[in-house]
Image (cartoon, rainbow, N blue to C red; front, side):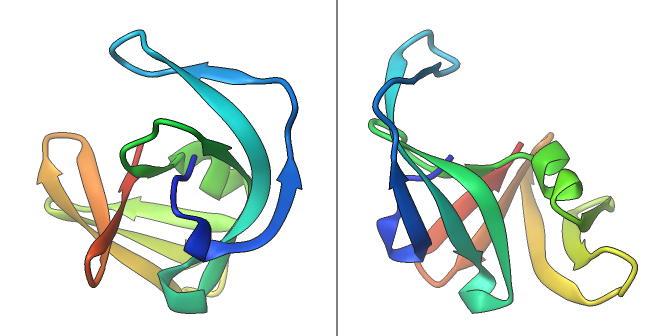
Amino acid sequence: MSRDKSKFLSWKPVENGNVTFGNNEPGKIVGKCIVSLANGRGKANNVLFVNGLKHNILSVSEMCDQGYDVFFKAKNCQVNYAGMGKIVVEVVEININAYVLREKTKRCCLS
């Protein structure tokens, strides 16, 4: 899920759809898109644009379904192109089970 339109490579409006955040607050899905990762080194497909989202969120299982390998270590995580070993992004752990991809002042959380 994303709130950062500057990363969109394509955009398709969605008329009906909602998500529920961890605090049980609803968020309206207004679009589906392809998003650039790590300054163009990779992309994520079928990303939902959600009103009210405070951080961009990437699903580990969705990344794996899209052909990436995700490796977790003690204090960081790597997202690689599957079978190629080429690192797309490196992510640092900010607290237990929360990892943040940082690009200058923008950030994206892995879930």
